[in-house]
Length: 396
Image (cartoon, rainbow, N blue to C red):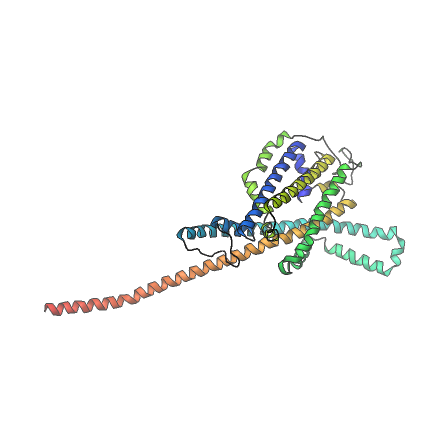
């Protein structure tokens, strides 16, 4: 989805300011990636929660040691309490973040799949007209009925969401998410292919006409309007909102949830090599995103929509490919969000059980103390009476 919104972002800021914003986010991205990777390597952790815990503790994680392990010194115990609270808060934030983003991604997936199925319903009947011999083929009729039934079934959003939930579940079943690792290459390929298609449209000689009343009735969005702005002065406030501290924290939290687990695969690399890989990766992403944003904005200019594929005809073959590519990419993204969701959920549940258990133990100890006090009161009364009788007899 980020690739599709880049042209609209350039429309909001202008070309020059848009490049500055992308450069800013690229620097931020490379910085957070580098520090998270180096932090994960230094403290030998497997997720952001553990990184927060052990960075506050100031010690590297010992393998097969629970995160709540207490230390001996008084100062360390205070640090452990603070680190434990921060870790719990981090788990809760990640849990709510994943619970919010996963349904959104599933809705986006259904939005990509439904137009594809509508297109299938429209194009399948035309095949019999183009190829009259298909009507006599029983195999062709079988495939026609099969694909038409599938397309009818997936025209409802809730059915699409249920279908993708099943796919995500099947991908996440194997040990250590091995299926997700295999199809993650497909996600990268899909994103790159989508960007290349948008760049191709920008460089193509077949540009949309100027927007006029009544033009292009089939798709009123396929037209350009206005001129290319280098610097949009009306968006300066939006620029400062984009670069706010809250967005920096949100970006670091949201985009790198699954970054720390990868550190166990690069523990043998030197610091210089890791830095080179990060800089190369972010530089390539910056150049690619700039190309996509500039190409998409230059096509439609002020008529650029937030989702640029909405500017094109839905039955354009390349746009159909974009929908297919992004469907594959978002499916993998949902799977990758499952990893931090499971970690944070299990940690939160363990914390709740531990807290409830400690409260129960505390309540039991209070009841035992109260009952022991009550049991000791009659004995004290009897002793007092005995002493009183002895004193009376002595005086007598």
